[in-house]
Image (cartoon, rainbow, N blue to C red):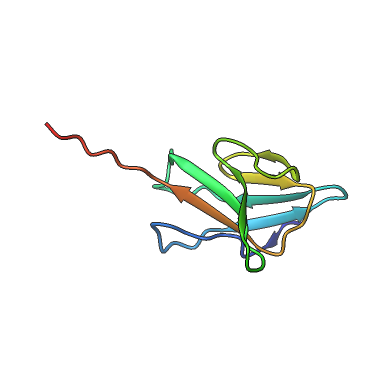
Length: 98
């Protein structure tokens, strides 16, 4: 059964985001619920936020750590269980000048 887990780092919102972590024999799955009003971000990332040297393990372009089995905007599946994962969305606004 999924357990609530504090894996989210939020940008641009004071809303609470529900995150769940599920562990199976060979993988850990991190899931973030869809947040209304935050559709189609330009970028997203999943980061290992443990210790003094946090690092991105997956983002919108690729997997950056070999422990990542799959990833998308709302789900990260890894072969490791991290104590803390930060999830970030980024929206880029273009300014047009006429």
